[in-house]
Each structure stands twice: as C-alpha cells, then as structure tokens.
Length: 321
Ligand code: ATP
Ligand code: MG
Image 1 (cartoon, protein in one colour):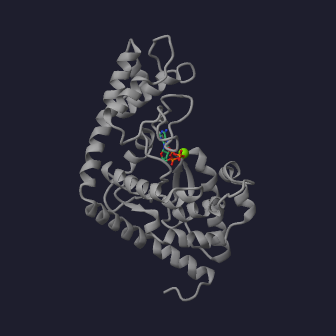
Image 2 (image 1 turned 60 degrees about the vertical axis):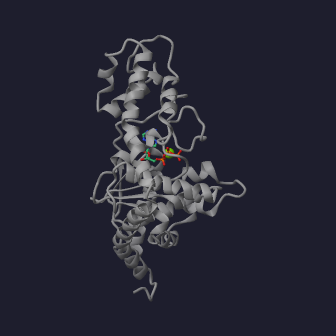
Image 3 (image 1 turned 180 degrees about the horizontal axis):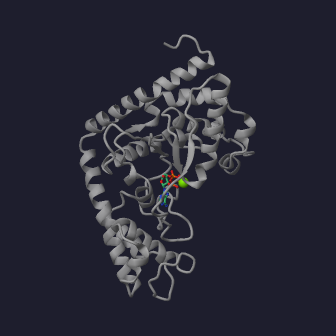
C-alpha cells in the first residue's frame, strides 16, 4: 500500500497539523509533499508562498519524516502534466458540483480557473503514485470521489492505466480545536495573529501564554464532555495526544483548570521544543536541506514518471519516449 499525503502551504503550520498529520508522516516508503501548486488557486503572495513552502518542507524533515520521502510538489513536473491530461478526462458539470468551488469561487469575479480545475490536480497527485487508500478529512472526500470517477473513466476510455483509489476515513486521534473558540477546529489559514491558533514555530513563552488563556467555562470541574465543556475537552484531548494518554482518564487527575492548563502547556512544549530545535539546526545548513529535497524530488519523479508516460501513450500523445 502506498502512503501519500500533501499539505497545502496556506498559512503557518499549527499544533493541529502536527498532531493530526506531520508526526504521522512516518512511512519510510511514503510520499509526503508540500502542495504548493494547490496554494495558488486563490490570490496569493509569491514571496510568502516561497517562504511557507520552504518552512513546511523543513518542518516535515524536522518532524522526523524520512529524508527522501519529502518533496515539493512543483519540483516534480509529473503532477502538473498529469493534471492536464485529467482535465481532458473530466467534465465541466462534475467540477461545477464541487462544494469547495461552489463556496469559494463560483459566480464571483476574478475566480481563478485553477480553483475550478483543482480537483484534477489533486486526482493527479493521487493517481500518479497508485495510492489505493486515501485518508483525507471530510472537506476533501468529494475530491477523492472525483479522482475515483476520473480514474474509472480514464481506464474505460483509454485502457487500464490507473489504480482506482478508495476513500479511507482518516483515523484521527484528535481534532485539535481553536483555543479561543473550541467549537471550531484549529486551522493554519486563520490570521497570523489569531490567539486561538498555536503555530509550530511560535516562541515557547507565547505558546504557554496562549494555553493559559484558552477559553474554558466557569464551573471549574475538569471533565471530558465535548458538548457541555468544549474548551476543557479540547485541552484534555491535546494533553492526551501529546502524552499518549487517555483523555477521559486524564481528567480525573485534576481539580482545577489552572493545574490542567499548566500541564497542557508543559506537554505541548515537550513535543514542540525538540521540533523547534531540530528545525533551527536544519536551517543552519540550507545546502543540506536542498540536498534532501532533491533526493525527495528524484525519488518522486522516478516513482511517478512511468504512470504519466502510460497515460500519455494511452491518450495518443506520440513522441513520448
Ligand atoms: P486550511 O485552513 O488551509 O484548510 P488546515 O489547518 O485545516 O488548513 P489542511 O491543509 O486542511 O490544514 O490539512 C492538513 C493536514 O492537517 C490534514 O491531514 C488534516 O487532517 C490535518 N489537520 C488540520 N487541522 C487539524 C486539526 N485541527 N487537528 C488535527 N489535524 C488537523
Ligand atoms: Mg483544512
């Protein structure tokens, strides 16, 4: 089974991204990429995109993702090349029905064409590596369905070329919530200074302060109860995820919110400080990072090129060696 996962550099990475994604990027045979092409479907700042792409790739390496499994999407040309072939296999009708497009772009002036065709690029990401099970969050499941439909259609019209992917429900230990509004999830695309979002590279004293100020309720009873106590439940979930504990069990050890928050801050910093140290160490040698990313690029290219070539041949593109 091929493990493949991409993260779009749409904002600085959060504690949620680390606990739910980054720290699970552990398959030495996997493919983990910074999905920078996906970050250009809405108005973007080129300098910020370049900086975030580099930061994401370095953080993936710092998190312990095996060198050689990390790459930058735009470094591997097969993604954009196959995306075009898949645009020639998809229909305007089905792309128009994508919820993300309907919510973010349909009918609005200056909607980028790439927002509309985005699912074709995502299908290319998946189909290039023959990934059979694709674990994604709920907001991406419709796009995986489309990748399935396109793969089935391509195989039928041009001959068996792609593995048809299946949607796998992502097994999240936690869905980290926003510390200032624990009814919504923590997201990297929040404003840079949003107080409820912990960024992986925030200074430790800032992180501690954010946790100590996390929104709770007023009854001072530490109990795991998502509906009645979303703030406390979020803190217990974070503590459990950082210490490999059980959130319901952990609750019984606390008799005040202050005590719980102090322990959560300690546990989060115990996870993030080594990551920040490793990040700092890596950034002292940019050449070495380039070398690691070149390894990842070459390996991804080697793995994906045969399928791109097969698709080209099947579609009648002559001349591809
Ligand atoms: P955006 O606001 O751009 O959607 P995001 O923080 O939601 O950013 P995604 O790019 O949607 O991040 O997802 C990247 C990865 O991080 C996915 O594997 C996703 O499941 C995981 N992830 C995102 N937010 C959380 C969270 N709050 N808790 C746990 N995992 C998360
Ligand atoms: Mg998201």
